[in-house]
Length: 186
Image 1 (tube, helix red, strand yellow):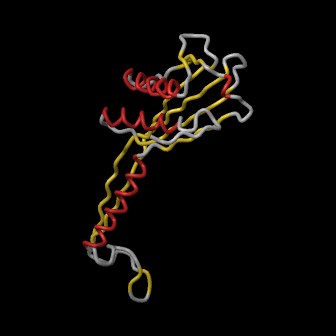
Image 2 (image 1 turned 120 degrees about the vertical axis):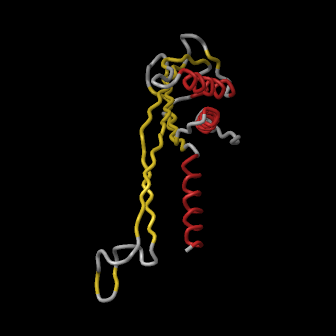
């Protein structure tokens, strides 16, 4: 039984580790020539999040765009940037059975028997927050969407971990930015 428990804990740890890394998706208008853009302005900064979180997101996007040769301007940039954050609660339900025959249900003897066995079960419910960051870019003259990045992952309670996750997610968004270029991941 101890070996089975060890395997279950190992699988759970792997699953949680996979959830900890933000998943990132990007999309763009293939007809757009991103080489024509040199400047950008913030149209909308994230709201409905603490001010420090909003500022960290803006700083992370600014860092990535500057690294790509784009220059921020207060207004009138070639591209308008908007960022939004949404969160939702998710739940894990873990059920543990304690009995060599998996408690009070199952097949025994000549058919199904309900209520047999001396085991018991315990259930634990835990909640966590999933956050989604969306960064959109628009051509300032035509007002058409040209690029979008989405990052989604579990929101850590520790502010330093949250800051690191924001940096990681935004960096992953901009790995192949502008579209058509490939930069080695950091």
